[in-house]
Image (cartoon, rainbow over all chains, first blue to last red; front, side, top):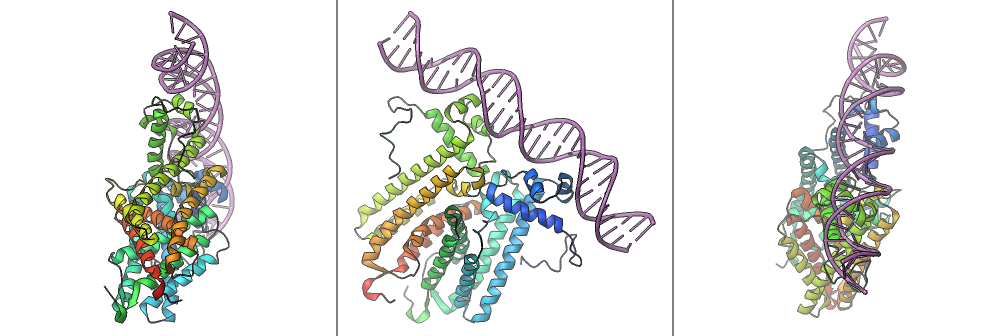
Length: 222
Length: 222
DNA sequence: GAAAAACTGTACCTTGAGTACAGTTCCACT
DNA sequence: AGTGGAACTGTACTCAAGGTACAGTTTTTC
């Protein structure tokens, strides 16, 4: 499973506070790239905002390609950490698998609603619209990342389907992907309208859909 | 309303076949930009594929900015034409406003399903992830474009709501936006998985949601 | 206190994006 | 049957950015 990298160390250690520069570069780069696109972001932009020199940048990354790869990895790890955390919280509230899903979505929507600024955007979506600029390896990373999100939901949807009837002919993987879809779509709307409301609403609409689509076995009708 | 520019002429005439070069530039540019991003697409790329010289390009567009603006306008016009056409077709089948909506979604999903290649992507979404590279005017164009899509659905959802009960507390504008959201999200998934299935499924899931959310007035329960 | 890591600073090369404009061809109109 | 304008071509210039190279400096670690 992704998202658990505590025991692993890619040339880093958590005893002191290493990587602060590398991490700062990544954070700054992600922020700029989400607003300007990958090609629209120059290394110059990044090192200026990260308060580092070009030499320093190339000490950490062997060029823009490697930066992109590191950004995707970091993004997916952070994302999975958030999802696992929210699911962990939701699991405390109820033993019902459907309620756990709904609880997760409630927390996720609340989290977005309480953001001080507009949601920064999703690196995966941004890179998808510049896929030709990135190498195969990164596209594969992104694909695997989205499949992890699918699996995260698929497992829980299947669990819910043991207790409730799912009234749709569409595959459960599509229902799982609908979370990603609503979030990506909601982010785009939120960025266009410059507030988080749209994203929050789309997540809550997905929640509403699940609530409607899962009916108790007794009242199930094909 | 958008999409009707037949009577107007920005220095062009439909008697001969003018603008073929301009149109070719726009078509080629859109195609490249959807894969490489706006910043990732050079004028050189465009003129090479459009079989024109740099001078020829600058004869038609006063630079990359103006190209971007023309692309968004063209994209929104094309899109609205398709939507209006599909809604017109769906309106022939039924007088029930909900069935008309569902019919539209069926046709839209079928249309995507029958595409020979993966859906090319949405310019609006692509530009949203490079918004800082574009001027305010284009961002406003995009916003207005999305609002047109919203209105297109909002009107029909409200019409349906007169005959059925809509079982959600969320605003009808959000339910209208959910179409855009599902399509944008679906496109991203389809691009990542390199097939149209995901987009088709997301549109059909939106259809399923509407079908579940609109219940006949007799069986309505707060 | 020596060595390795984590940088800074500078200088340079190359590509290509974007701009500008002068010149050329094509065609419509009279 | 030639003039005027639209639709280009060709060329040339500028400047930013990506990337390279490397020598020197500071900071950390053993």
